[in-house]
Amino acid sequence: VMAINDFESRIRGGHSFFQIRVSTRRIEAPHHELHLLVALDEKSIRIHQNRLHPRGRVLMGLEAMKEDKAFIPVLFTKLAEQAGGKIMANTVAAGACFSLIGAPFDFIENLLRDHFDVRNERLFKENLEAARLGFDTVLGKEFSFKLSWPKSYSPKGKLLDGAKGIALGALAADCRFAAFYPMSPATGIMGNLVSMADPFPVVVEQSEDELSAMNMIIGASFAGVRAMTATSGGGFCLMTEGLGLAAMTETPVVVVDGQRPGPSTGLPTRTGQGDLMFVLHASHDEFPRFVFAPSSPDEAYDLTVKAFDLADKYQVPAILLADQYLLDSIFTLEAPLSGPGRIQKYTIDDRDLIDPLSYRRFQVTESGVSPRAVPCAGKALVMISSDEHDEYGHISEEIENRTAQMNKRFIKLKNMSKEIRPPFAYHPGSDLLLVSWGSSRGAVSEAIEILRNQGIDAGYVHFTELWPFPKDAAADLIGQAKRFFMVEQNVTSQLGKLIRQETGLMPAGFILKYDGRPFYPSDILSTLHEKLR
Image 1 (cartoon, rainbow, N blue to C red):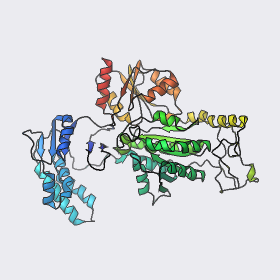
Image 2 (image 1 turned 90 degrees about the vertical axis):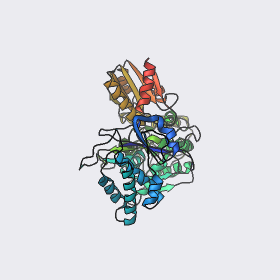
Image 3 (image 1 turned 60 degrees about the horizontal axis):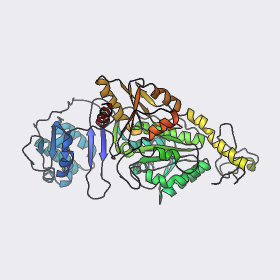
Image 4 (image 1 turned 135 degrees about the horizontal axis):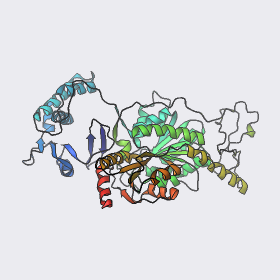
């Protein structure tokens, strides 16, 4: 199963829908055509009718609009009231859907029994009747896309969205503190953490604004616990001064930027990939950081674990670039998530330190990583400042010291680069190559499979670990193709610019989408065919 959640940002009004795609094979992208449209109002028909498959059907909660076998009237509200209350109109619609796609009624009965359990027998019986009324209304209706329903089966996995994947990854990485100010689409991450806070040793705090959230996690990390925040691009704008504080004090933090279209408020509940260049250069002056962009909920889990570990190891900020599509969409997770094993601790044991004043928090080392002691946990006197400082943490404006501290921070990049995995490559030596990043991988992968089935020599290279940029691997993989096209959800091809900057490679063209909706494989194919004419 793969499902996208598309909803307006207005509290009242607007159009919202939920699109579900079902298959016997792994699917990771939505589809542009609809086989079955469940229209709860007339507006839904007007908006989506042009996407209906020629043999598709519309279940509508209205009397028949016209003589057309595509339209099957099911009076959801009226039937729900007959069963016990109009609030069960959705159960009527579900019953009609299952009937149309060929499900046996006992399947629906078992679902409802599991959902209502024994908590309320009356609700179960009323919803069962509502489902029966919807089921019987369309029984025997023609539908070309019925599914086979074996007598016994088990689901191929569990359902997971990106927001929960990141939240679980944070817990697996031993995150002990999270602060946030609600901002779509990242609020779901913190909502999931709140729901799991009781059985886990994690404190989740809603702050008064994004600046406070960032400063809170810096304070928590300074005190020795792993900490994170999550926001959108607009909230991240407010956090950038704090990001610089974390960099100057070499305090590890993890920040999630749930991208949405801007600038300003933009499209608050839509998706995009417009923040890559922003997070690479966020805050003033220069400092090292990690930037990751997961492509699926399970990868979001893995990269969150990795972000916490590497932020701690190198004492730098780690930024996860998610987006509304990844955070709010649902995917089937076929393999269980695995824990990271023992959590590596990178702070020092200073309990046997003889002279507390001898501790140098920002000691210049060959690796650039200084010994990090937790304040008040041992004997070391930990001193830091938001100003440039010497090795002990005292403010210093000496030229030699400034140069030494900048070099110390940037020498970390040598080893940080070794932590970055190369991009995923599928037939990189093809005549035609698509290059993408983040959540668009599923659509790109499906588009490439279609092209290869058409006899076109095509492949793709996909980036999820973006900074430090894996330039040698990128140059090698992308350079094998005769020509490559960038696939991105922004106007200026931000990854394309980064690839050219780091490798000198120039794309043959661009497949760009920035209307706030996710890529469909058909979007990629139609634009590519136009480019190839």
